[in-house]
Every structure is written in C-alpha cells, then in structure tokens.
Image (cartoon, rainbow, N blue to C red; front, side, top):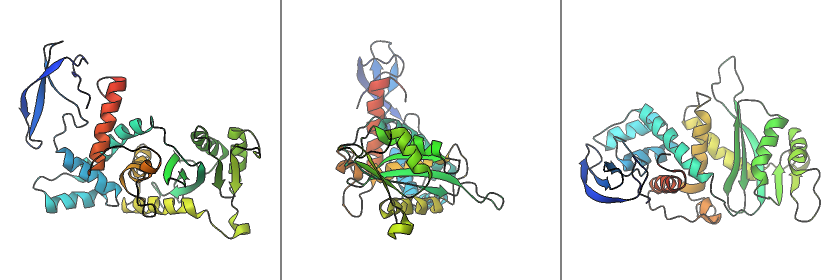
Length: 300
C-alpha cells in the first residue's frame, strides 16, 4: 500500500499513535517529517464513518441482486448499526467510480472472439415514455470478459454503434459477431475500414436469426444477467446515475464473481490475476486507490 502525506504528498514519515473512531476501531496515524503534520493513510475509505467491511458487503450485495432497501433490511437483521438505502446507493456509486478509473488502465489478454449486441434498459419508463435507454455490450467469449460497453439515452443509431465499435478496436478482435441490425455494417466499415477478408484482420459476422434460426446466445446470456439485476433494482431512475450502476454490474461480472461455466473469475482468464483476498470488493478498492495514488498523486 502506497503511503503518502495527504498534506504535501511526500513519503518521509513515521508511525505515531492511533486515531480512535466510533465504528472503525483504531486507525494508524503517521507523522510527516517534510511538513511536520499528522495524517492517516487513505486506503479508499478516508473519513468514512462506517467500517470498510460493511461498506464492501453492501456493494457486493447490491450488485449481486439485492435492491438498496433489501440491503438496508439485511443490515437491520444482522448488525447493530444500520444504514439507510440512500447510503448504500451512495457507497456503490462512489466506489464504482474509483474502481472503474483503475480498471480502465488495465490491459486484459483477450481471445478476440467478440459477441456484441444492444438491449433496452427501462430507465424512467412511464405510460407516456414506453422505451428506455440502450445498453451496448461486448463479451470476449474465450475469457467471458466484458470488454466494451456503452450506455446511451438514444435509440439505436449508427453514431452510437460507431462509438461502441471504437471501444473494441484497440483490442484487435479476430471477429465481432452481431445480429442483423441495419446500423452495425455501416458503423463497422467506418471504424475498421471496409469489408475485411484478409488474414489477421477483423471480420464482421452477422447472425440473422430469421435466416439461421439461431440467436446470438453468447451475448444474450450476459444480457439476461444484467437485466435480471436491473429488475431487482426496481429500475434505474436518474440518467447521471444509471451508467455508473451499470458499470458496477460489469465490474461485478469481470472481477468479483466466478463464471458458472468456467469456474473462474473472467479477469483471471484474461491474465489480470490479482491477489484480492476473500473480500474481493475490498481488495479491488484498495488496489485501485494504491495504484492510482502512486500514478496521479494524493486524492482520487
């Protein structure tokens, strides 16, 4: 864990006593020789009133299919100190943003077998607004790693499809399989430069269910999990919050839960083997904060 003074950013320090807290036991204090001030190290939970185990338990329960109110009720039954459902949502959004900033710096080793599709997310649907937002998603089938996503309040269109393909281009896929949506071929040609039939070039495979009789089931299995969790959230409300929570579902899939078929967490199959411990959310948060702190400075 990288330890830096929160006041001057230097690492010239020594341990000097403890700070007592109401819910987080004793926290190690440090004395900085550079600025002659005391500080406590930020491991991702700086100035948080609740215990880090409780916070990460709430995040894991929420992204594992419990609504924020059900997580609150779980704490009421099992802990003496409770938290509101609003606090649970705040924790989820806060730490998804921290972790996602670190995850974006990683370079997974993928098989290049990409299955991509889009699905409707019923955010803010009312009797007068039937349609929801569109969630674009691509999964690398060799590792089950979700390698690209896009959340858009617009209906399916070429510009969003182009932006979605751009997120996959740097991974140099062998092929991308989509359904027969009319916007996919045009967006693919704009991003990958025409029809690809040369060796070692990306191929666009179009699976037309009306001709083949087969659905793009490999991405549909991911969508069934995603939409199942959105239903348990009782829908997504605010447009600013929805993409953050959707990214939390992706992090849960890629880094926290073992895949039922492979028996391994997708990030491990993608070569991102990290020692996160039993509480993987806690390990991932501390790893994210430590790496970003060493790269960018004091606070993340």
